[in-house]
Each structure stands twice: as structure tokens, then as C-alpha cells.
Length: 68
Image 1 (cartoon, rainbow, N blue to C red):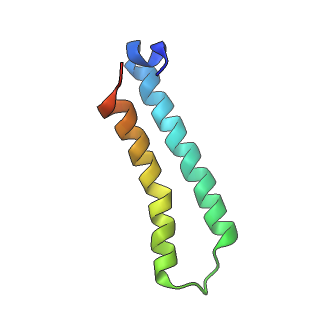
Image 2 (image 1 turned 45 degrees about the vertical axis):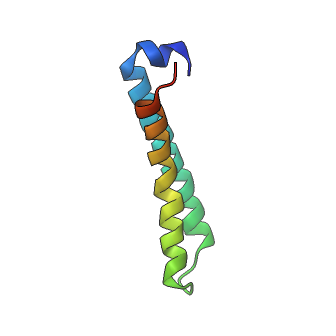
């Protein structure tokens, strides 16, 4: 992890927010362009997992693990 994130919590917070918002924007636009209305319900559930699980992993890695 870069030194600025170890020293400055605000920079870490802003990087986390920026990465999550970028991920949500990309996955939402991909989901809207690829998926149509004729698919089974579990495809939408898998799409939601792909949309929301990686930001949780990123937050866990940046704030909980915090490797030196």
C-alpha cells in the first residue's frame, strides 16, 4: 500500500469511495447493456453479487487488513 494511504486517512477514504463508485458505474452500465428482460431471476441475483461483493472486499482490504 502506498505511504500516503498509511499516513492520511482522508486520502484512503477518498480512494475507497472513488474506486467503489467507478466499479458500480462500470458494472451497472455493463449490466444494463448486456442483460435483457427474458432471463431467469437467478441471473439477476448473480449480477447483483458481482456488482456489490468486490467493493466490500476492497473496503475490507483497505481498512481491516492494513498490511504494513
